[in-house]
Length: 226
Image: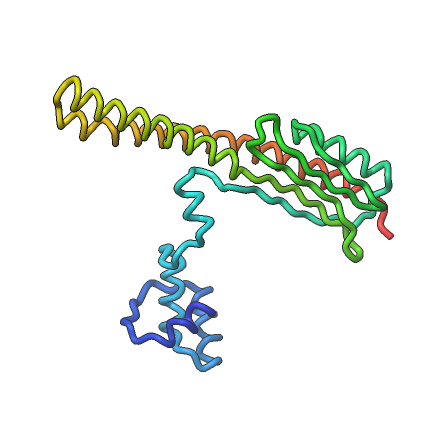
């Protein structure tokens, strides 16, 4: 409905895609609201075909192969005791696989840690909000991405690619073709290598964090409700 309202302000041609029952119901609502149903059809077609511009985060993920961060949030109805918080903290410590800084206060705790290489930062928290308890697990990978893409693409791709390409190609071999082809090939291969390693690392951590959250929720479901 929001997208159709935006399209109503433009004068571009409107295509006529096939309509389904759900879309027909939406068109009826739009008509009752004084909006052109044809624009609803166009908005639905754009959404189905991915016509709207993707957010910046999605574009970064597409380039790097994985997101720069993962955040999981769930809520449970129960209220944790101090013993419950200690149990959750031990779960977080195992999943973090690194030195952390825990902070427990009342019915809540916060955790922050980084791995031994400093390439990822993990945060976890349990907070009482109203009648519910919020569970949060978050991890950031900016340092990992910078190290991989900077080291492989910048160091090997640019350093070796252009260094060898120009030095050997023009200097030793006297080949302009070699000097022109070798650098982009090495650059491309180094980017693929960095992207593959980053994607594998982040997806592996995603599985760990999802299992952690499942265990935390399962534990929270056993807490007493005020």
